[in-house]
Image 1 (cartoon, one colour):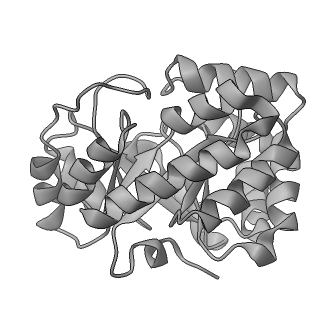
Image 2 (tube, rainbow, N blue to C red):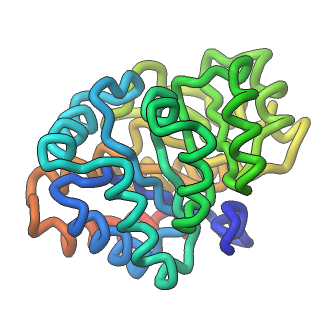
Length: 258
């Protein structure tokens, strides 16, 4: 099975995010395969949730559309399992603790592992409270991806020491969304991480242009883009696949130049 760090082997990784089930589970499946073909190194699938506190309006609206269209965690897992044999890159779920608890933590991780999911990102679980989740992840070999933010300061190294897969470096305070410029000193955050571990660091929140992706990848091991892709999906609906594919191709080329 592809482990997450394979995405970073001797290269800068481009990591696209899409909201599962927007506009439909079938289109999500097509998007995953198209983004893989376009050069994505790892894919994040958001499990739609009614209260996604880390997300800005673009992804919140996508969650609402996906839920209205009948998307459920089980339907997403079944879909990922149906293309498991076609996946050559790692795929991770991004979700919140509530949907995992409701599903059953152990049942969720077991099922995710069966589908070929390599890891989970759960932004609303603080480092200090990750034990229950970490135990279930370990049992089923699903890596729990940690986040560090510009306000983590002295906690950066504590979080980095125990991080698995890759470290998600949040570039901006506030919620996800496209930003004109990214002012956080990412290099400084990553220097702190490098003092304690060589785990890959990918930067997300706010990246939308090839220039931004290249700039962030220059400091780190990769760039994560969500809202800009989710916006393309919103704009084109069921016809979005070729547009997303083209965008991912451009972003991957920019990251590769970093």
